[in-house]
Length: 357
Ligand SMILES: NC(=O)c1ccc[n+]([C@@H]2O[C@H](COP(=O)([O-])OP(=O)(O)OC[C@H]3O[C@@H](n4cnc5c(N)ncnc54)[C@H](O)[C@@H]3O)[C@@H](O)[C@H]2O)c1
Picture (cartoon, rainbow, N blue to C red):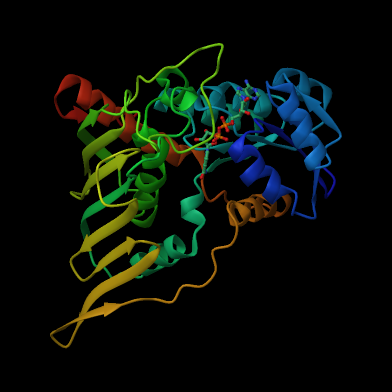
């Protein structure tokens, strides 16, 4: 490979354009070669906007015709695994959106394809790349919290169902509701900060109460149901769960697209023997003691930057200079085991053991 990176993308919707094309187009080493979307006007419009040479409606054709080094996958979730495996088999590095896929088995097939191809695969878990999560991980690694024995995380919206009736609310295409859509971000960030302890069991419940809600802002986005497939809403709009880890730590979680609560919130809380950590409303607070007095610290963490830019810069650096991918698919297998376990527990009305193989 020359020093330049020949780039293509599969899926030119909100995330494909707003995160991937926008951030890769700012990388001086990257040439945007091709855009693929099953909606031809969308592929052409994105190709025009980002000066790509070609547009396609079939990713198999794009991978066959173009000599690409790097491909983003930003399609509905059920396309992630087949598109990623096809791109890896075509000899490309891949940057695939979250959730990596629908099940741990499918994510493992992506890991296997990466091994087979000898290429990199990064999952777009952008919350890990935020300055607060980086700070928290370093702070925890330095031992300031002591042993972490409990954690909580959540992301709850008052109203914010993405593309109600479309692929997000169609389980066969999305894999589920807010647990897989939002939960994947914050379960990941908890696991990441805690150093990825092994989850051993999960229990939980899911609720679907807003399918028929006709309030003014029940849905958050402009995406409309696909006229070909009609309106489907067979996922949860609230999920709660409880996870046990091999090291004795536990995690409580709560994710919703719509709930009758005061306002949207996302949060992480870590309970340690020496200190605590809370992320809420974009602010990080550290709880400790000094000479017998409780001491709260609010680190002034700088930066943040545009959506996806830190992740994209990191990936370009790994591809060009080597190193370890910061958001590898092997860790996404663990997150998917937790998510699958909570869905299974809700169905079976029982705690579910998580297999470790
Ligand atoms: N990391 C984040 O913060 C973040 C934010 C939003 C979305 N996402 C993820 O990005 C992915 C896309 O979400 P979105 O909001 O952009 O959805 P979207 O519906 O806006 O875009 C998906 C696009 O993929 C296209 N598509 C569908 N099947 C295809 C195929 N076989 N080949 C090529 N194109 C195909 C659709 O036509 C559409 O344009 C999802 O996995 C979602 O979870 C991540």
